[in-house]
Length: 240
Ligand SMILES: O=C[C@H](O)COP(=O)(O)O
Image 1: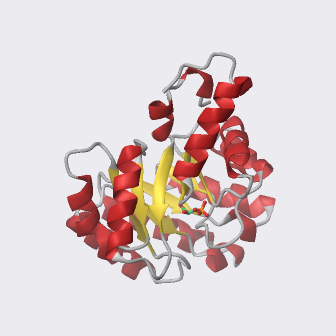
Image 2: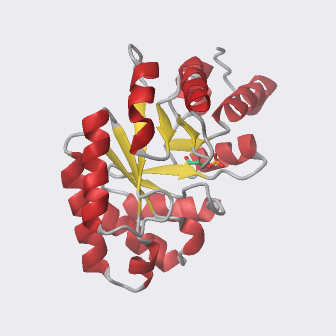
């Protein structure tokens, strides 16, 4: 489990994917988001589709931040072939991490073989690039959350991600269930769609076993979490 008490604020940055996802996002907003992500030492800068990849590659050049392209964002209802092509295209343009959206309806229809095959096609198209699968927990029953996580792990996808951030975020118990289901596998849990109060909820999600949070509010959360640690919420504050 992530131990926030032993981290500097800069270390904590690596627990966050800094995202800018709105439909009306402009190039300058993408560039500014990259600059903010670098300032906060985020793990990745995430954007909605492969279109922005070259701009982000340019902005993140010379840093260790990952270039995070969304795939099938946000609905995930494209055919498997379309998503595989989108994956290849993003990788070709320089993406170094991919956040794909599961076809929620197919899972609800219990088309598990189809869902698993799509996950495998995605993983194959990504090659060595880090993969994530967004399951959209707010639309799933507890049983469906567990099933989706098992399929994500079976396909060898690196991260199961809770949400696109376009709908409701996960509950702490959703995240605990995902962590529990994925125990003993190589798949880790990323939370997105952190609801207000965001800093406090971010704390709770890390306590539940999440290892990464994707959010447009990374700066706000990191500043506030650091202040909360300063106030004694973490016994050994280790500073900036
Ligand atoms: O990574 C996905 C989204 O940015 C999460 O939504 P949020 O920014 O509202 O937390």
